[in-house]
Length: 170
Image 1 (cartoon, rainbow, N blue to C red):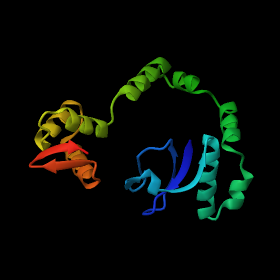
Image 2 (tube, helix red, strand yellow; image 1 turned 30 degrees about the vertical axis):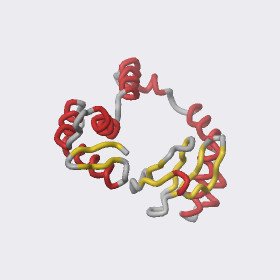
Image 3 (cartoon, rainbow, N blue to C red; image 1 turned 45 degrees about the horizontal axis):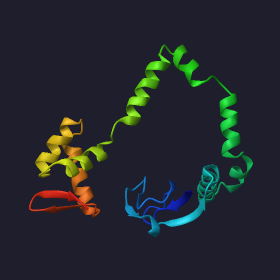
């Protein structure tokens, strides 16, 4: 299920897949319970959700007529696929090995995000103090400044708590 939702702070619109417990605005970062988000449309068809969001964005900018003239996302994707060269040919002609690019993409999709690493540190460490979390995250390639900001953000959002210098996820 896909829902077009909006942020009450910055008026951003985005599509949420499924029914997560919380959703975070991609523009301002405000996290809210999913049920409290304004849902403009809920549908099983991702393309329909994309169309609704695009239509709403066009209307906000006074471009409803221009939006009505263009095709659906499915039609536009077909036009893009039919025009130009495919990705593999483009990479090859640019002197880049497409197999190496695919291998790098596969590695990227299995790696953890910085936020996931910070959360994992809080969850896995026996005494997750800020210093220990920073050290754990640093060993996994996350900078100290990002880790410190992420810890504060988790506490502010109510997703983590701090008691006498030790953190835990809520």
